[in-house]
Length: 376
Figure (cartoon, rainbow, N blue to C red):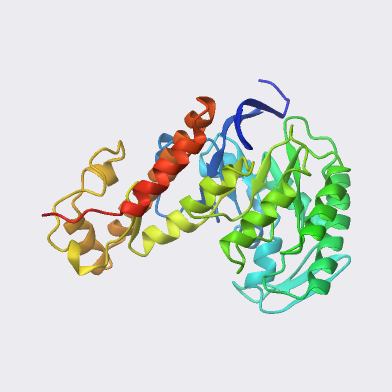
């Protein structure tokens, strides 16, 4: 087993790239969508199902796992891979976003952030060094620096302060991470909706010569066109030979447009959360199974899908499960959604390799726009 972390670009089509990230625990085909396993589980799914759908890597959440069952306990139990029975690559976020969004009481300074657990009210301190230590105890293959994410809209002064501190924290995280063969630490570009701050952040992180770079602080309240403009500003500054990860994004439309701007990796809770709330993502667009028009519709979500949840269950049955609040409804729709996301990524990779990504994007968007066809 190789102990090298390597990113190889196989083909480009405009700014879009396809390739592979190689790690000791496996290869991640890019562009890649990482299902979110917040607390050691991709909600409503068996991990064998997640793998069978085509996922090469999943995401674990440092904040939630440090609170329960606890990072030290996970380490004693053999690490996150063994505990959840996922022998493939895992990326862990730093926990910073959840500290900012979920913690009712928090105090942030140069040393890190002190916060109150949303679970039991206990007090915790997370420094850049502690974030990396926790991720190491979990045993993740790709670890993220601790950063400060500012929701938009926000004052420029606040965005700049958080960006500058995130760069300083990245330096400390790099030192704490050290040299871990086969693993990687990614920096996170911040700067809100300010192009010059995005460039400043990207250039500072580039100088650290990290193994990968994420774009953070987007999909946090700004319109899609602002997000895309920040990618157009940021991606050309980042080293082309390193993987680029857009954190917390997003819808299928967000993903395909971000790939066109040079992004290689994505994660988002949207396909699993939407599934639990009765919303299906399909090649025909979104389908809300709560709507009464599905009550006697015998068609499946997608008769051409290889996923049983998409192909073998009628919309009438799915509608009934959702309206009756049956757990199976959320399970089947989550299965369908993750299948569609992985199908989309497969199609994107193939299109880039064949030099027809622009046509693929146009065809995909056209099919979404035509929408679902009601039975006659």
